[in-house]
Image 1 (cartoon, rainbow, N blue to C red):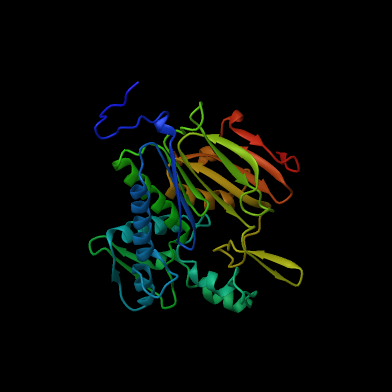
Image 2: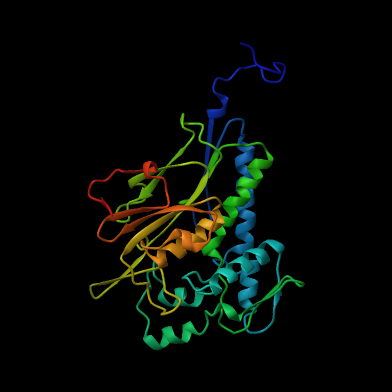
Length: 334
């Protein structure tokens, strides 16, 4: 057998569609792994990383300067014009925040008050929590479509798109790859997964996605889900904790109370058709709990979810019955 275009491709490569190219990067405050199959080149991965850095420059709140930080610095004073990217993502985040299902793009002041995950974390005084609750109302974020401007109407408010940005960025990388004919790949932005196309590694063309053990180090899976192209994102109480006087406080704060959300869930992993929607739905389902009726959510992008409870129960919702395999027998299906 001879290869086509032998003048430019002198070597025939068997099973070219499954040829794998991986690169690891550091950005968005996490470890990023980009994997592409087929004829993808190292330049394709590097260009995706350049895209990530560009979006981080626009969206980060972990530096003094970015478009989002310009909005925060002007809180209570004046609106700030931003790029179309930042405006559209903010508009989506504000719309979701106003639905009051747990997602809140203005929750930054509360997060900074608790500081869970940092050395100086402490349980705030009730009066401090109440004062900061007044700063997280998404109705006080004014958007002007004509000007592409954002105005935080109260001094001390903060816009933080971190709960939605990784998903948006992953979707844009997928767009970039599609424009270059990359039909299969894995975009892993620190645990936010987007599986592009069909898996070339399996005869059934399905990807294998692990469900993180909430009580073990990252990488230990309690179960395995077989899925086609999808995004998988997890919300859980296990990654950051504050221990005070024998009581544990996790980092997922309830915008209604200002305290860590009370739940019997250790985590929930959602599967959606696009990654930005996965970021939204993982918050929605974490707050809704394991007994939620997915059909009632009216979210066509939502494919299913796996709930893990504090007492080591596992509930699979919306996924085909043969798509989940329990790997750790210390857990039980519910």
